[in-house]
Image 1: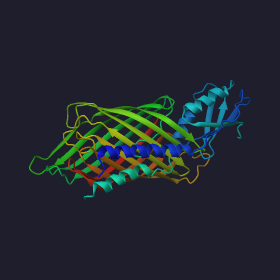
Image 2 (image 1 turned 45 degrees about the vertical axis):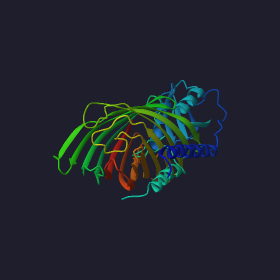
Image 3 (image 1 turned 90 degrees about the horizontal axis):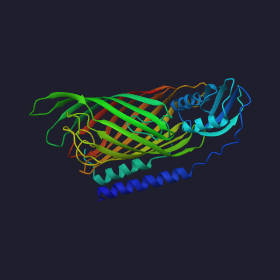
Image 4 (image 1 turned 90 degrees about the vertical axis):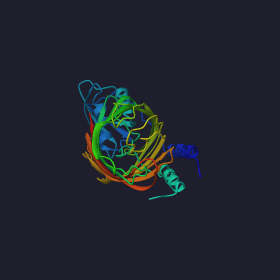
Length: 114
Length: 280
């Protein structure tokens, strides 16, 4: 019969191995070319790791807090974040940072399609 | 129901190994590696009912326990959140040879932090995240629901999502320093506690999110194992449903015993949890 301490140790080791193996199987998302500035009143961003409606709202709330972003919406299935800008658009770096800070991965920027 | 401890321990280990696919949706009875963004507050209000019986301690207690819980999580900086939990408890105790009674009061407060150390986003929805957490159960008052001591705990949470499937796995060690008078729940006695869980979540609807999708229905199936240094071991299953909208979520879960080997606390015969989560 395994002792309690042995059982805990084995469980911890197995969980660690599991985490490492799962992490190793995940591809890293390369960030596309970062534009120097947004030239239009709208832009989109491809985002990864959205996972659920509550998470999507968390991202929208964070991005809308960036100076120059008037509104944001999200196509959850496609991972497409669409932003509408004010007269002075935000810097792409600020938007990129807000997406990362919200806990998601920015894959690339693009022009809005709508 | 008596099951050999070796079988139970193997089942507990299996809980940690059933991780296959999951992420962001948090199960009702276990933490997850997901967290609100910095500056956002997530509040969770929950009502729990637990019925305890088959008391092996000799007291022969049957207890109906109600808990109204408030849990808050606040994003501090990217990848780091603070959380707190407080609860009102009410217990109706039926014990032969002693006066039956009902008692109520404020449960101990739990304060902690959670740090996400791994994030691998592999698709628009798909992700893998891991977080560690440290917490302390703080005595709220000298009543029937307090341990009157500070009880620290550490834990690790894994959340993974692949399409409509999600998997959540957790492990927690509680360094127990005190006990509650009734000792109903795992970790309520003076023995240290290891709690592990594995949960499969499945998005029932929509099959794929439309551009305007704002909500989703999930089923959840949790397997929860507890092992204490006093030898008490239990394994429970908790099927449930979870509804997520953009700014709130609703959840319901039923907790049922699978197997246990208990000598120091009564058996949980049934648990019911209903909750609402709000994002601010």
